Every structure is written in C-alpha cells, then in structure tokens.
Length: 201
Image (cartoon, rainbow, N blue to C red; front, side, top):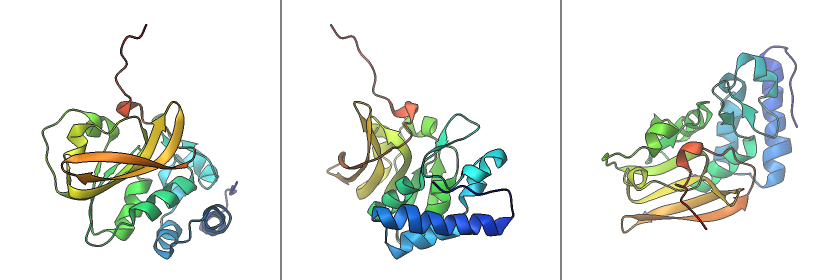
C-alpha cells in the first residue's frame, strides 16, 4: 500500500514511483510504454481532493459519484494487454474518474470517452473504433457497444462471472465479440452492464 501525506507535488511524484516499483513491476507489469504513461498521469487528480492521499494505494478508491478508481494494477495489466498505439482509434468507457482516458491519451492519438450508462444503453450508433477500453468489470458486452468497434477491433475490460472479477480481452470477428478471461484480480463492478435477471425455479 502506498499512501502520501499532505505535502506538495514531490510526495505524489514519490508515490507514483513507489506505485511503479512496488505494485506494478513486482506483479509483472514491465512494459515501458505502460510504466511511462502511468508515471506521467497523476492519479491524485482523478479522485476527490480529500482522498488524494489514498490515490496510490493498492486497492480501489471511492469516488464522490459512488463509482471507484480501480487499483493501479488493473490499469497496468489492462494497458499492457491492450497495447494502445498511435494508429488506434480508442473508445473509453469511463467509470467517473477520467484516469483511464488520460492514460489512453498518452498512448493513442484519438480517444473518445463515454459514460457507462450511455455505453450500455441500446443504440443504433455504428463506429470504426479499433480499441474499446472499459474501466471496470462487466457481466456482458452489449451488442450495441460491440457495434461501435471496427471488424478486427480489440476489447479489454474487467469481466465478472459468479461474483469473481477478472481482466478479459477479445476481438471482433465476423461481427461478434467473444471475451476471454485472463488474470483474476479485484476490479470495481459496473452495474450498468449487469445481465438481465429472469425468474428461476
């Protein structure tokens, strides 16, 4: 866990270095482009001011909206799996902190942001995004959101199955997206992407 006191920016810079060395590297996140992006983007700017000292802890931080900023490891593993590049047109489903979008903008030239409610809503929008990043764990990927991906486009997200959250990745092939669970880890769940519940006997 990495906490900072209320001293100025030097403390946050030191906390970012500690996050990289003590949370990311030791957990297998070693891609230079990921570490550089996470070193540049200040997590403390993406939480409430009174929670800034908690910005670099190794767990989710509550946001005023009731959503969460996920732990650093989630973003490190997500970016490493996604490998956003200058040629990517990225759609970010932002849970409310703006942190994932800020990281994506460090790596890709074109980034569009949407909120979970809008992303999960039925829509006839079509798109040519080559990469979809979702800041949280979903139970299902709506067809209307998958439709915004170009053929061959990638998805990296959290996935929740029977209460267990994992990083997951997929690619759009033949108009369909299948998500493959990867590493199990703690990821805040996005209720907008819950499966519809039916009757069971």
